[in-house]
Image (tube, rainbow over all chains, first blue to last red; front, top):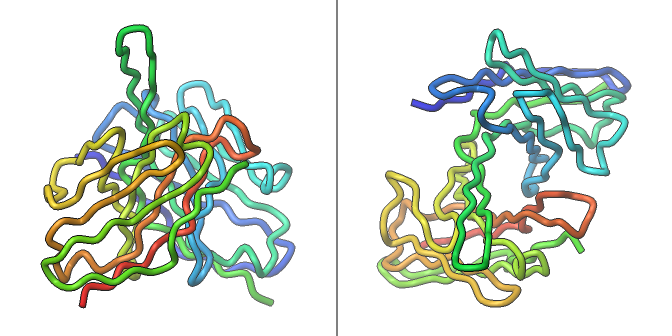
Length: 129
Length: 109
């Protein structure tokens, strides 16, 4: 079955960096983009960015530009999310989620449907001095 | 603008029907997907596209869309449906290619 398994919890000091991994199994790794989403304590979901495991191209939310780097290792079917210059507000659970999409043609209308499935179990990153 | 607005909380009596809405400009161009999140767990996809349920999701969950509003309906709510629900859509107009809704806490009474 399709599964995403993330690395364990991390505790970091302000100003440090953290690198979270997400290992995929049960499907062709390079055929699906991967998202990273975070959730601060008691808060909602926040989209961070997406990586194409095939070529390594990325797109980041403007909020994280310059601080986040997403990479992949096709030999181990693993994607990584590194966040630098950590501050207390970065304390959150970080999730990877597989991108799914399908394009349908209805007459002259072409529409693409997008969704995230499955999700990793989450990685708690705590930033504290 | 990259925003999807949801009511913060709704309640429903056991076995009754509840509708959760999600509003935003991006929904005029893209379908929403819906995620259920229980405390301490990762989100789980419940609805995507026009009204598609992944395998394993009960048929009491359904989706619909009109204009700038997407809706998730739970018909015959069960105790195990108590959770937070988030919508999501693509957004080609803002700084975030993907955007999540603010989330709705569903309480089953």
